[in-house]
Length: 404
Image (cartoon, rainbow, N blue to C red; front, side):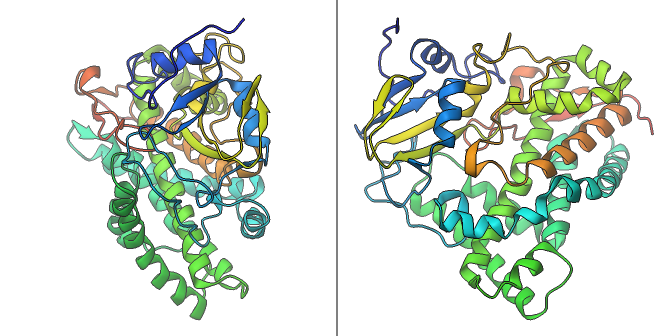
């Protein structure tokens, strides 16, 4: 029997159950009504989906559109939108088939498991070099600035063919783009600054292609410069922001569970399972939007055509119906089947690259810095509750010795 809970007005976002767990109100909703009505700030009624089975089913159902231009985007925390967002060329994460299929197909060969395994040794070298630099510094240092952000930025720059010396441009503008409480105009201004740089870059690559992924894409005559720019912005943004936040927040989580960190140091073979568990436990890319293109039944509820639907991957990944003791970090858990990379046709294209980077990053960090610890009290760590990808703004750490 369904429990009766008040319909939420706005999306509960306060991390009142700790820095790694879903907000308490969301957890209660998932238990009582995993597909729940929700009232948006402007009074529009939509839906919030929090249960693992319902989220998985929804993300595989193409009747729920990813296009932001077919309905008004009622984002909690943002001023009420009055018209649909424009569709951005090349940004296939916000497209449906056949447009999504046409663009994504051009990239699938670049991110295969085999190709990512070939990169693994190089990524380990990048990680070692970055930690060499960190070891030369006098602690305390900010792990975000010295490790978690540079490693995936270096990797994605090399892969795409973006000059690493231009990183300030894309790091600053991608961070501005991900701020929650801003108008659509402000968000699009940050996106415009990022794409102005990338449009110039892909135009050069079309004229003089090199040995990199953007040059490979630029050789496709059926892709316009606008589409190439949109694809480049998506890959650059997703390729460094998500992994950087996973490395920083994952280190924070392991420092809060020192016995598990010690196990990983003693037994590096545990790392692949530990990475899957950290992905599940943290779910840094949490909130996604879909639009019902027809009346659809989900979890015993009828979602009306045109409804905005919010999906919480963090809530789904902490669903006790799917994972035992889900709010406990357990590096021995077999957490495959988590939804941190999404599900269905939009499942993250770069997931194998992210796994390789995290395995290399965490393995090397716990080996090289056996005495690593927080340099400030846990409660003082600045959480990214103000951003659309969760993590920490800074992670001050210290150590007494390093190892090779």
